[in-house]
Amino acid sequence: MYLVKTPWLLKKLYPALTWNKNRKSRCIYLTFDDGPIPIVTPFVLNILRQYNAKATFFCIGDNVSKHPDMFEQVKNAGHSIGNHTFNHLKGWKTDDEIYADNFFKADELLHTNLFRPPYGRIKRSQIRLIKKAKPDINIIMWDVLSGDFDINLEPEACLQNVLKHTENGSIIVFHDSLKAYDKLEYVLPRAMEEWSKRGFGFDSIVP
Image (cartoon, rainbow, N blue to C red; front, side, top):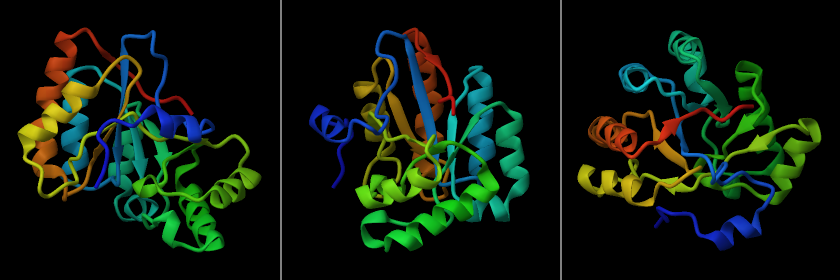
């Protein structure tokens, strides 16, 4: 069970987290979680390049360690980098110290002030631990969840998820992962084309 559009009440309950950007700007913020990996990340970079778009990649430290060349490609293309822990830990089911250690293990490779907790699940106590050591950390959530990770969701429905709910300042979640690739390959070029027709620009989240 997941919500495609983040409700305003949830944003109000966690105002210290970033859910969307400037609503007055005709700009949207594409984010890609779980990479970098071969095949999928280069595909994403190619589509973004076609539209002169910048995005934010929330990278798993283990994948960066395994695929440093892919990581360099993302950075060299001018995209922003975010931390997604080293092993994609779910905060609600992980001891606070273990979670924080995993975050900092990834931080040794990523060196970024942007962080997205995997699954969007993080305890307030874990936030406090991370912020105590890294006060300038910016925890990025989202405004629109594409659902590209959902094995039961058809690509056409995934496309409608993002086209229907995106608005000025939306932070949109995709995944550069093998699990999401069948939908991402269908959705991303079509969504980019339609968003461009609607006059949206594409920018990265600045650390």
